[in-house]
Length: 90
Image (tube, rainbow, N blue to C red; front, side, top):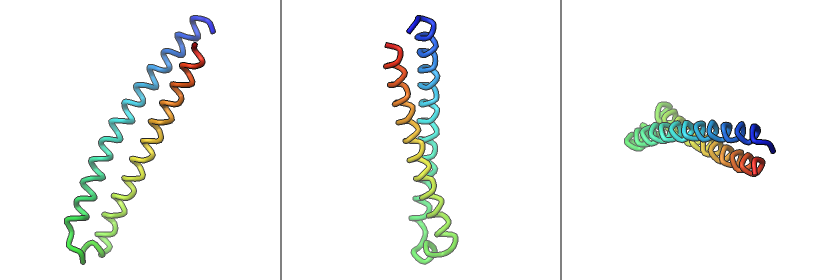
């Protein structure tokens, strides 16, 4: 691989690292919101937890948990792409 293509790959790796950093920030924010929502649900009385509103709060916390998992997968995929790019530019 020539020097110009290696430079382009290095730039792409930098951009992917930036993207991973943003994904990590988003994950952290989602984790905070999820924890707050889960705490709000747990602070409800047992009878209110079973109500429509309580179930909606719990469903929101569950959906946020899934979103956190999806962001984790994105981070892993970015790491894998960086590994492939490093291999390609050797």
